[in-house]
Length: 307
Image 1: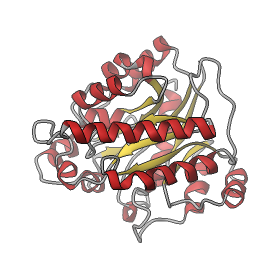
Image 2: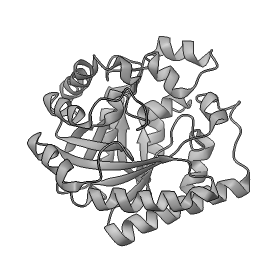
Image 3: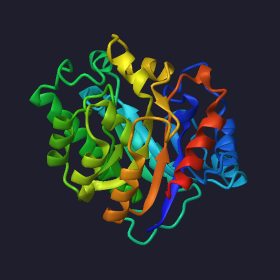
Image 4: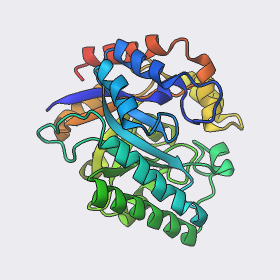
């Protein structure tokens, strides 16, 4: 079983490409390589250029390959479907032209993946981590979202051979255990897989180890985060958006928080999981001076823990 530990631009606070405080994308790739990573995600649509030659040159100069691109957008609104499909075309076309690595033995689908995340709903953003307070989608709206995910996944695979993986995310309409279960029921494995994120699972009140075990047959890709328990307990007592909680430091380097990574290592061994795991640590980009330190610490800790 071979694991490749990768990273993503959200470690530099890159979540909204319109944020004026974001670092240059070239800096992100350079620092990822300095920290010893060889794989990286593209980040949100609109952050890296769509020019494959330009991006590919910088990736190659840093010895990096891409593991995924991301649609981080409103998956519910009917009026947004055209934009979602255009993003699918643009991201997948770029992914297929960039440096990649061969699939490992036992890896269910080769990288790169298209990670699909629902986002952009104020009420749910403020309810992040609070299942009892979070209003669920009406059945009609849920089915609209499901149809949008299916359209994205079918397009990405049919035209580009890129596997779509759906990512439950704090503050979106796919966050809590019941929503994850319904998603897995409504989206068959032959259409899309799952990208489960240890930090978002914990934030949503789920046990990461138990949840990864339960959805092992749908698990194509994994994100690793860790959570500072003291900050987590503080922000859950506040009316706060998810990324405001990240700006307060709710996410910390791997091994410094409350998630049981030795148990996750044992589980992945038992499952025979092979392929990529991406380290993330969301923050405010204005607090990015420690990124290189933190992502290096995460990678070193995981290496020492046998990942």
